[in-house]
Length: 90
Image 1 (tube, rainbow, N blue to C red):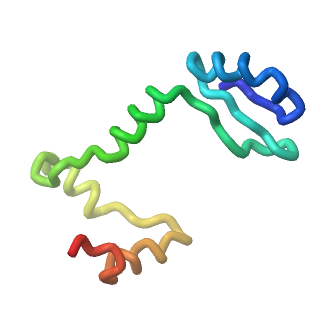
Image 2: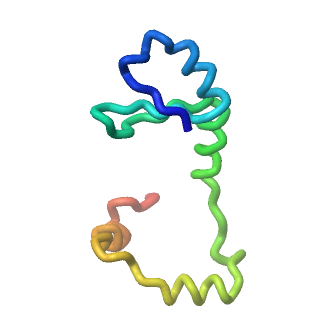
């Protein structure tokens, strides 16, 4: 990825063209804050995020591994979300 510093915004056209070839990172106070990517890449990533697979397509080994998996410490709040109607499709 190509880093972009706010002091170089006068060269936006060059970074705009670079973003078509590779992601451009915009930093603030030395920290990565934003990424500029080509529109086609954004659409591809969004489409991939929406991909859904049925659990019936998983093999026995995958199902067993999923059932045996443990949640990382600190993510218990995600379990609570699943147990509420907060995200129900109804």
